[in-house]
Image 1 (cartoon, rainbow, N blue to C red):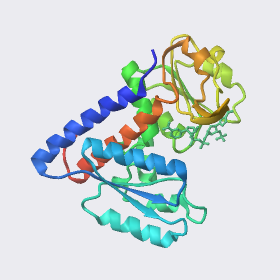
Image 2 (cartoon, rainbow, N blue to C red):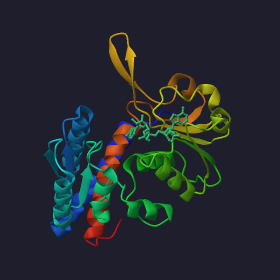
Image 3 (cartoon, protein in one colour):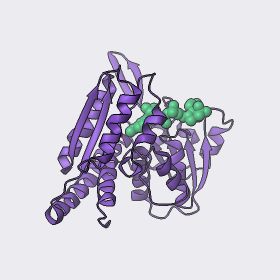
Length: 288
Ligand code: NAP
């Protein structure tokens, strides 16, 4: 089975839209998301545009604040502090990467953890690792939801997470642990990655290495989630491929996400989900 990320995201967005409509009727309140975009990094421009379009689709008020690359750290912090106090803003997202003179961790720590819809604030990271309710990094959250849509009970399964970034690998590991998987983490220094992979019932790959995982690495019937986005040359131009050699791997799997059209669209839907969650938490509205 090939997991259709676009279809999955559409379903999730519809659910979010309906819930927002019903909350609006009862409370006359609308969730608000503000994205801070610094400089003119082309891929970031595209991501931010897609986020704004998707937010509008589900009824979230979204705003993009644009700043020049030269913005000072102090100025950026004061912008965030203002947004923290703004009652109409429930989600704050600072689009990465940031210019070199700005310390990413300092900026993220300034965001009110209740509004940290990227799930990067140390309080959210800590809450996730201690099994408490938290805002969770959007990409791993999307991967988790897709895995759960394939198999509800993951207890006792062997899961391999390839990649240990704060953005993807580490939060994904926490989500799999919470489901009682036996989790192994692979990274660039792991010696026997293929052998570890062959034992895994669930493989999530976020390494940023084109075609790293091959068909003969995969246990029959495994669930494979490919987070990787790699731009590779083709005859005329470029194409985007994942970290999994799709053609050889697909034959072995119970379910697999393609690249493009797998994890990417679901990531954006999870950002909207996080904004709705933040909005409900801030306004003491119960979760459905
Ligand atoms: P990252 O911060 O560069 O981390 C990559 C991880 O992969 C590191 O832990 C690294 O190990 C490990 N790694 C690198 N080469 C490896 C190899 N040959 N074997 C095993 N492990 C290896 O990357 P990231 O931010 O997590 O992103 C990973 C990929 O996901 C990128 O392609 C990115 O574009 C994509 N991505 C996609 C989405 C989406 O929505 N679809 C969202 C975010 C990111 P070390 O720790 O030892 O260096």
